[in-house]
Image (cartoon, rainbow, N blue to C red):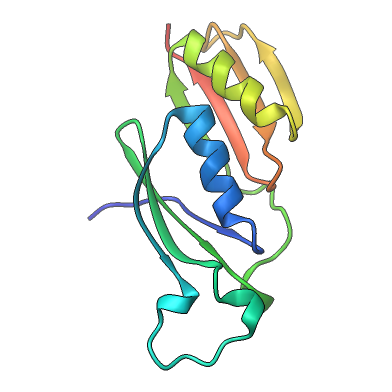
Amino acid sequence: MKLRPYLTYQGSCEAAIDLYKKAFNAELLTISRFEDLQNAELPDFMQRQILQATLRIGETVIRMCDCFGELNDPESERLSIAVECSTAEVEHAFAVLAEYGRVGIPLQKTGFSPCHGVVFDQFGVMWNFIASE
């Protein structure tokens, strides 16, 4: 059994993929669009939206999609993605995500990490950074 984060967006999944590739040097493993569905009658605006994408960030694989309607509630602070890496990697990714996002906890030394901080990216995803060195 594997547990993987599954992130949903309201039409901005492709932009999120680009941001995470820049912040984390992520690798896009798979991508499919709603237009790839056979015999599906969808509104024109949905055709190029992301049906399913898979990214590798370090050793972790996450899944992502554009989700419309009732299944995609607004930003939630109940769930975050913890990122454990070096201080240099924390500083880089945090800066990229914070550029158009919102800092929840500025980067700081804590009792459990030499560099810890929380940032909400421009899509409302909460990233909890914990440097290990």
